[in-house]
Length: 96
Image 1 (cartoon, rainbow, N blue to C red):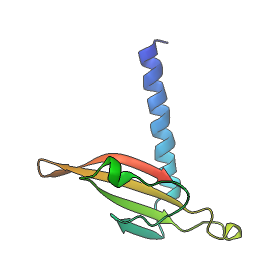
Image 2: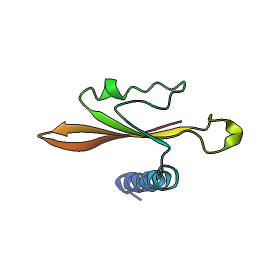
Image 3: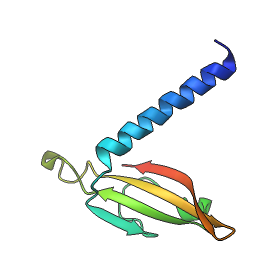
Image 4: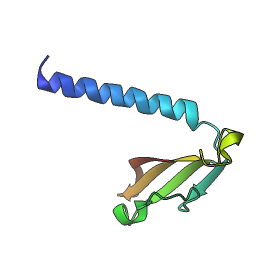
């Protein structure tokens, strides 16, 4: 297999992994934040630094298993930027 074909196959696999993640974990979030970070942990959320002119939506789950008392929270951020009057998805961030 050529290097280009291998790279394309890896991208396809990654796309399928992300698709599965989205379908399984982020369909019905507990909370939704618009330009507001909900899930705070020890991970730096630097979306505003990376996309200073962008907007983001956070789909947040407060936790799925009661035995972890909310420590298994997770969030998905969709980051948008406006260009020529139209909004475009420019980033997908998964945080937990």
